[in-house]
Length: 147
Image 1 (cartoon, rainbow, N blue to C red):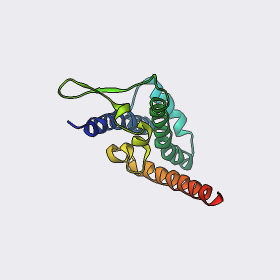
Image 2 (cartoon, rainbow, N blue to C red; image 1 turned 60 degrees about the vertical axis):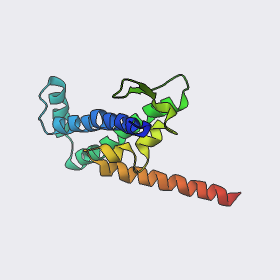
Image 3 (spheres, one colour; image 1 turned 45 degrees about the vertical axis):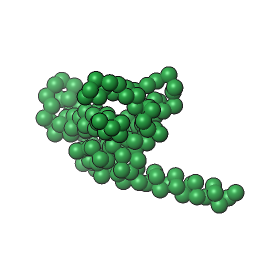
């Protein structure tokens, strides 16, 4: 199994078990499917909002979840004392920090894990990632022209 395959398996695990699960949790809460006490409390609060406000929250949620995951992964890129290892099918461990230029980039690039593996509103992430990527490219371009 290649290092890239193991890295992508990690990305798929993060996207499906964290990103998508949180979006599903919110959607189930907002539609009354979840019946625990806290979800019922949130539902009453959500029902008091205007439809436009609720739509905005639904649109904003993936961005908040993606930002949280990306910031968390970035800590592993910035802090040498933090490592993420994943066990392969053969039982050996691969240090994921060593097989990528950056875990946060693997998640956040326009064709990164969030877009590739998500089943919950991946287009929201793709649009935001492309916007930020294009904006940073323009900033870099302007800095080059200014010199």
